[in-house]
Length: 175
Image (cartoon, rainbow, N blue to C red; front, side, top):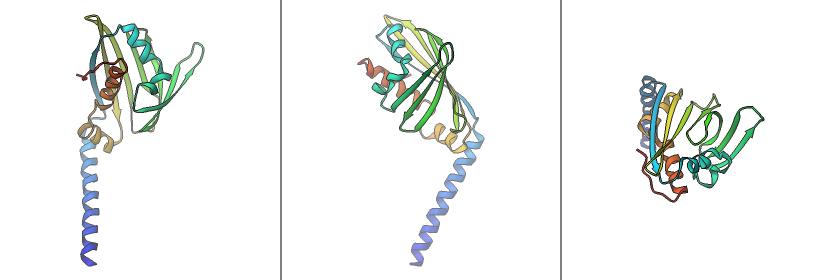
């Protein structure tokens, strides 16, 4: 029984030490980061824009999104709320140049992360180069460590772009 107690204490102490090291490393990483990925699709910029701008239809082609609620007021901002496997996130469309460029920003301030995505659609070889640039901020030191060393700062962009390509029946590896 005593040996079991020592093992449990050692495991708990090891976990606490591991979390402490992760927090220390995370606190030394910069809060802000920039990440950018792109894919090529054999669709026109207009066709791609129509899909990515239709926020309410995202659950039909994004596997990580269950529901999207959109709030549009006449002459006012466009807000939308994504509910997915990682919870609910509120966004604002802050720039919209149809078939060329779109910028969305996270409105929530209590998630431990925030920032904006800039979507650029460029005509290229009878198709479209879709580029997403993330200007992000990760305030939570543990999440900062994990986003840098465990899941990567481009994982969400990669999942989005891969789902977009699949929607059009194409295979694409974000680069």
